[in-house]
Image (cartoon, rainbow, N blue to C red; front, side, top):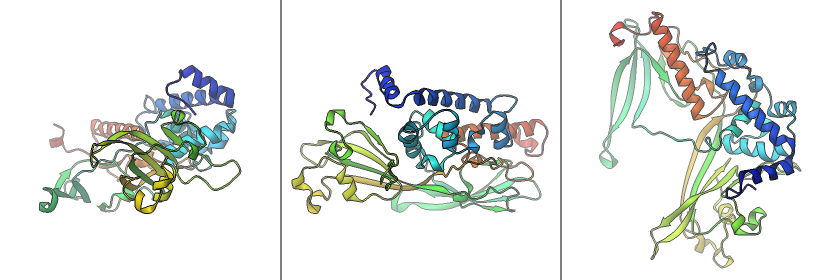
Length: 368
């Protein structure tokens, strides 16, 4: 357990005492991995049409190896790999070390928590169709958008024309129809189904439920790994205490705690209550209904792809003439919002290079 109030050197000393040189070797490997990745966005590799070739040129062969193989090659062994690194891959990608390639395992450690939360941007516009005009070589984009709010809202359809279109999300979940069909369609890949549960309660987490004795030593984030004896896996990936909130429906208003739970399946209310320090006299169904758990929000989504070792990745180009581009081909390589943004930078540079080279992807009237 790491205590944020302790000196960093003291936490590092405790890690070294328990896990030995695996801690130091992992830090070196993470730094080396990040350094190699940044080469992908420098000349002469950048910009690139092939993620696989760019990774090879940058020396990132870790994407083609199982995590265990990469860690053993660098002198990193259990229990550090199973207790620390696997806990990081579970909270960041909902996958165990045996399922994930070595590069993504290093990314889960390099993130410093940046990939714990995936922000969902909800727009009031939904693209339904993209069609190519044979006369102009441009693409017509048909979308449905909402007008107004609540009961008085309505939908309307709009069609606009573009020289270049960039699809910045997984094609398999876009529900967009392309006419003609794509020349280079990305294959459908399996995505993790993750359940995120936010809930509030006036009760703190129970130290005894997690093998601790005192509340003052209780961590704000609990990560899980697989039991060493091969028993059943934990029912959740991580449990975090986000902050305190004010519950307004009592007089006076009381302080409560906001929690976030990541799990592979919808959690049972009894399991959630079992994690809390609730007095025995109110652990009845009638008493706990709306009292122990005062608010709950559940979200199911396809959070990230499964990330087994592989050497080939999707092309960023979807058509023959360079008018349709794709950024999510990088997802099986590294799945983060930051790297998807960098893939957008790569695609933008490829488009500009084609324009400057006189490729017919932009009409002269649109170069202003």
